[in-house]
Amino acid sequence: MTVKSEDRFVEIDDVKLCYRVEGDPSHPPVLLIMGLNSQLIHWPQRLVDALKEQHLVVRFDNRDSGLTRWRSGEPPADGYRLVDMADDAIALLDHLKIDSAHIVGASMGGMIAQRLAINYPARARSLCSIMSTTGNIWVGYAQPGVIAELIEPPPADEQGAIEHAAALYDLIGSDTYAAEERPRRRALAEAAYRRSLDENGVPAHPGGGARQVGAILLAGDRTKELNGLALPTLVIHGNEDALIHISGGKATRDAIPGAQWLGDPAQGVEGMGHDLPQPLLDAIVAGIVAHLK
Image (cartoon, rainbow, N blue to C red):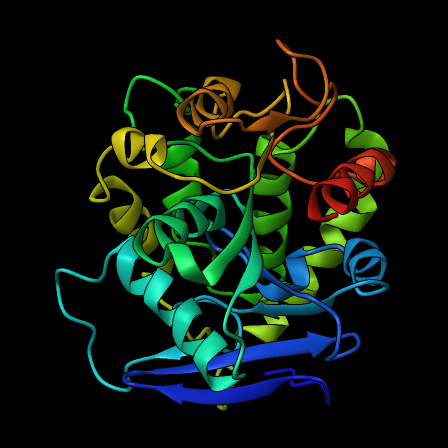
């Protein structure tokens, strides 16, 4: 288990949630919500550093990821829902005494961000949904075999588990920038693995990925509820996304009145897979910064 000095913790019902806060507390807050099998470290530090120039940046590990612990005993068979994960985010804002924040979510985090904005409209100043979808099963689908690979239990040994995660990043990430991204993906897989071990050096979230997939599958279609949102929204999606097809991003854009779109109207951010590749970060960060203004 790797705990950094900047990692903070708060007890929320049956969740011990790990979070970080960066930037000037007097600046408008931004809440970053990451996705499936991902941690707060999956937000590129370069993106966080750019945002914290003008914002207070809050990010956290979802339940069943990283240093956040969900339940000390045996998890129930029915797991949890996206609404529970949105409630975790709201409880964190309450803990930090933040009345409202700009909400930015990626992948499953985008789904959680959408649910947060729907259920708690007064708490969301704006919404940014990245490589996500509406819950409509006819859009935002994965390429054949990808979900099975995603929920496949990793090898028991450390190096095998790290290589397994790095291979998943290659599977769903940008093809255009795969060669230059591969060393970063390997380093991120290693950091994420070591950060998610328990006090005994054992992976702390067995079955967590499958429970998160279950939360996504049980969430239902949010399209009609998204139609009722009235807040500035930016949708970001890439044309090389193997996990959530770009049709999910387009459906999100079309569902939310006045939603803006980053990149080409049809292709989105060209060369972007289900990741935030370094060569595209400047464009992505610029789009988010402009949106938050």
